Image 1 (tube, rainbow, N blue to C red):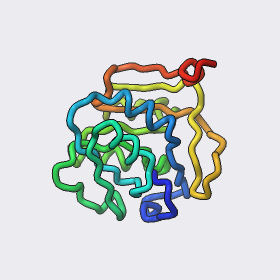
Image 2: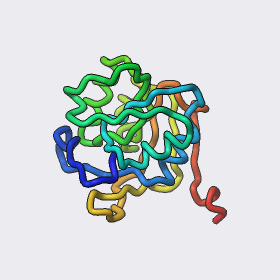
Image 3: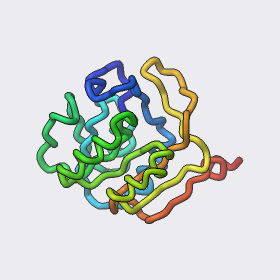
Length: 171
């Protein structure tokens, strides 16, 4: 999700779940994406998004589109989506990605694994040992309601990854 004051994707949000991925988490995820030349669609972001910065720094081409994800056609040549979609519409987002036949790397709420549904879409999982925090549109750090995981259908370097940010920070 973006970092600017643009609210264009909220058309797709049900519960006002506009939260922005923090740079440190975007970096961890991007560093675990395979290094193929990829043209990445960021349908839930604006041009000020940390996702745009982080992915471009790592050599990925990014495309940001304005509009409702559910009615916007994917830009020509995009090969995948890497993002933090609105959790309130996660099942609809996943179904649309499947219909578009796009590969993906998505942050999703951990409790969704209880339903078994995510495993119908992807087979690669990344777990964070600490809860992920997100920034709000007002620039505040939110209190996480639940831990999150990353789901992918083959774009991560490993099928199962555990991330301990404390060890990465030397704590």
